[in-house]
Length: 437
View 1 (cartoon, one colour):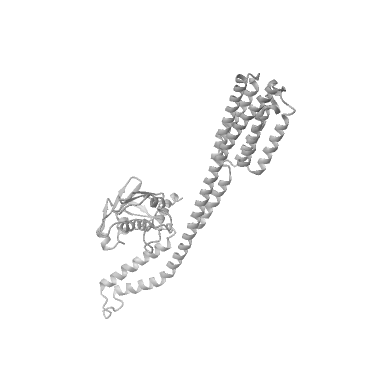
View 2: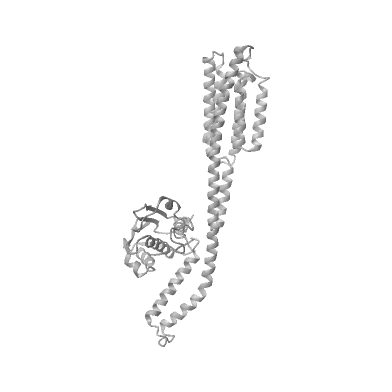
């Protein structure tokens, strides 16, 4: 089930990687603002720095249209299904505005015709091959119009060394600006692609872990199913022995031994239930009302006598709760046993329970050596364990997190090398299946 869930999450997220991302749209908006500011700056430099006689009206009209369209693009929903068409339309509008701007200020002799290339590159990255060809055709047509429809600038169209020098300097400025824009955007593209590759790699690793967990879940559920029948037979025999229906005097088995067998059979049943629920789900267990004290006592009764002596429980008041009790007890028992494993053989483990208005907070504190940042970063990954080989499968914290996620709870860790570890979980006092997400 987990692998299927992981793969189902992988597909829509992979599709999102193919679509224009909000980061790219934000970069486009920012680039358009820079382009508008650059056009105004070049106009001012040409009119006042070079003394060219240029009309203000065409520039202000084109800047107004560009600014208005950019404001609309900035507030447009990034997740809209028509976003690709919107970006394509904006690029076509920019080509029209650039064509108009060049036509009013020199036409084909204006060195800033290089900016047509920016739109082609943006279309190739943001919109794909088809839109790239559309933008390339529109840019080529717009550039071609500069040879037929334009308002000449005397300093650019006259022949001579001065005009040539002015044109070459304009081409240099245009080249620098185009190179800066393309370099910035391509660097952003590289960063976005690297992030996408890292996200895909993470999703693949998660799907692989889910497949392993699914295989383990299937094996555990099958083993639990096969073991239930012989265990039920043993339970019946032990119960009959306890009732005196079976003569046990000749075998030398006393009542304490029979009681021990009964407890061990119940323990095996609990283990089989855990194996059936190893996928981390709640097993369909219905929540029922009980006291918080009963929940805690039911969890710690599975501990050995030595562990009982080392466990200090604080704050287990008889507050009423409505919870899937067995699942909560398994969660607490897993955290307590991990704390014992991390502590020295004679060190105490503290279980602090704090009832709140709508939640229950439980903290498990050990006296171990703590966890490094590298271990904390991987805590909760399935099959990751710092215990010796054979001492655990690395699923305890993972299943605890799965359970808390399913009931709207939270999981926090406070640890550091040399200071021990405190794990704090919070879960609702009244469990509702609607909270499972």
